[in-house]
Length: 421
Ligand code: AMP
Ligand code: GLY
Image (cartoon, rainbow, N blue to C red):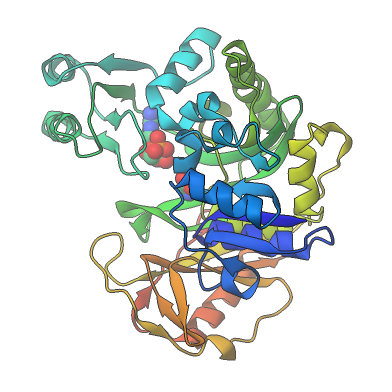
């Protein structure tokens, strides 16, 4: 079977590698991919918002299945676009993708279906929002409604920080804003919880914890993700049951009531407060870098899982995992998440001595004349599986040290909550 993968990050390289392992795959095409995927697949330079060209290319190259990595095409309705074609496409439709496309959509579902989440209010203009700030206590969380690449969330410690957030959001920093969300600040520990669904059956797809902030100690600006580890230290059977019954299943049922059968990965960002799960946000895809952290633990054929989802056959498939600790560190361009230089040569790559259980997934890279150059803020993901998070992290350090890329930086404390120094 020929398979298409949409996206160009570490998540898509990790998916590409898993698909390549399948005996069922013939050829893989990545739209547009990166230097890493070019080793396993053919990279195709088509803009991922150009659904018509992706469809034409897929039909003429006999692609039977397309896996969508990032959220934007899903929110823009790529799955609906492919509906009456011969091509299976893996991901939720436009209605379900609003779970990520609109935070207010998700909050309203939580309200109607009594899903535990932070208390909230929706404000249509700055004067309403500022009036509310004048009578509330801090900290408080202010959020832009739509997609903002993880940047439209402000944790405000006082009124003046709140005023800045309101002003920036209504001034269009994250696109035209008809309203914004103000939420109660939840104090607890975060966890990413993943499931996969075929529209009928829901199966767990592991847990993880990512580190979104750029600086050690989880300080500084938010990024796309500086590293992650899996499993989360918080997960246990009792909590898992609560998450499924109080959060995931009512959400899938709510979407059914709206006429949408959820197919694809669903990623719940949760705050665990005294053993109780609260929904912070939904993403309608795998996380990045959580995907790179989780997929190497997978024993079952990834392509079979995706196919089973497309064919609504997930119930009969057992998803099996290696019982190991996985940790991922992201090597970034110096300056990220602000200004950074691109097109810097990454040497020594072929000199790295990877053990079984060590993986490198490219993100912002490109290949020119067989040499690898940086091409983005998050450049490469180093993942290691072992019996302890500490050993995984040490192995990654040795690889990053051997790479010796002077234009990059990385966080040295990924997994600090699960590693005793
Ligand atoms: P989001 O993009 O909604 O996941 O928010 C980004 C980050 O802001 C989350 O990972 C949390 O660390 C934090 N956050 C968002 N909402 C809340 C909340 N209601 N209480 C506490 N922290 C929050
Ligand atoms: N790691 C956060 C995300 O993928 O949204």
